Image (tube, rainbow, N blue to C red):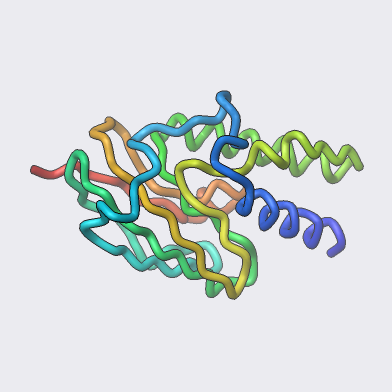
Length: 162
């Protein structure tokens, strides 16, 4: 239980860090942080234990969207935008980080690397928002990369429409 509280606390701390703390080795594709004044659509997403209310998403190239992510689950969740391969890399980083924590290796540099420029981490009972401007990218998806969540179905395809 103590380890879980530490990990949840670290996720909350990381979510509050600036996007630049994410680091060059963990950049995600599919666009960039958007400008609030250019938002054309707001998408509400509810995260529950291992599910998103959003199953897929159709967007236009260059569209700016505000995501409002509410966590109704018992665990922290992420909503990140990236390619299938980038999500796989991020899940590996998350698993490795959790393993280091289990062995008592509290790697604060890795925790800082979790601040996301392509989404948010949301603690249970909390709501977080982020603005994203999409850029046409193949194999793009949104997902929660916290270990086990993606595998349980917390993901969805992002399709570009005309």
